[in-house]
Length: 459
Image (cartoon, rainbow, N blue to C red; front, side, top):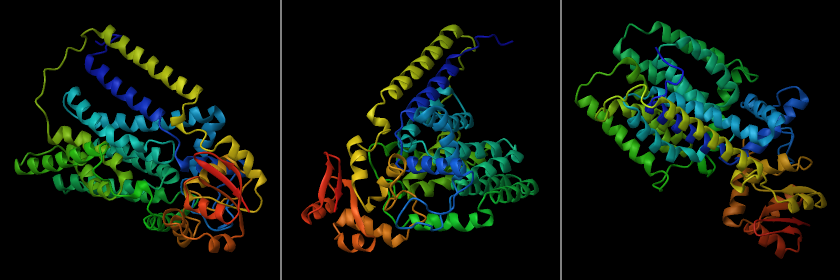
């Protein structure tokens, strides 16, 4: 019979791993997209409806915007109304921690082995833990695999219903269903009826969004458009220090698959599902760095199956349970204090104040249409709500040619005259190092604000 203080050393290790994830996710900075998503949530809250047209730019005003993340935007805005940016960040951190908790439960073998693979995975995963709709996918990806592996299939349509309304990553969910059910069918070809019905139910669930059947047209179109731009998270992962664990685990995962196949070692249904789902995400992670985290969330538990290290004797269930529980409580309090201190300041790494106060005071003195870079538009939507932007992180409403033209202006120093005359631009908010700043200054534009990072210019 378990006592009130049934805290083994293994349980303590698991708690410390999850607390570490919570702390790291809780200290993740706001993404540039986080701000326009908060603004969209605010707009929907005030208008009492989902918005599908651009209302914030002077370059695409009134254009169709497939707002497939509407529910996540609304949820994050509600979090902001209830507790400001601290609650927004904490909510996202709990989503991410919940996803890794499921990844931990999918793993097998000694806790120390799980800790090894998970710890290596976290190094390459933590770069994309910002508060934004992507955090929902980081929960639903391992949740989907867990439900398939444990044969609790009829919860999946509910997951996909929510997932389709919070993030376009739901398409990955169908990739996982195909891999997971495919692995099960290889083990038992008679077990196809229920998976087929579940997949149909999940497809129907994804049409229960404000976009209806158009969802299946607009998400692929959006993915095709975003591939045209050199955005960091859609680039291929390189051999950098923080991605070295990813490449190492990817090689070990492939080695484990080959070794298991050569040894003719038969996996259980649940083990086969986890390995198949990790395998299908591997090429996606090699194609785009944003998929590295989802792959590692499944590769870590798969490695505990494919490369089981020598098992250690299980620790006694009640070895110093009070000490273990005490350490867990102290660690929990330490994490809470660290987050409270970081949020109270707030520390610069959180990026809660991305626009200098002086620049915000200068912008109202700047008449006419505004020019800004793609990455800075989200800041302006939230902190300068009275100004229409040139571009922002919502790439869908804008013509691809316009975004590529702005990128060339920033990266190649393309002359500003054609774009500025076309959109009657008389104000600019730009990084100080932008080549366009030098061009505007040479053309006689007045400087309303300037520091080492930012400049506001007017004509």
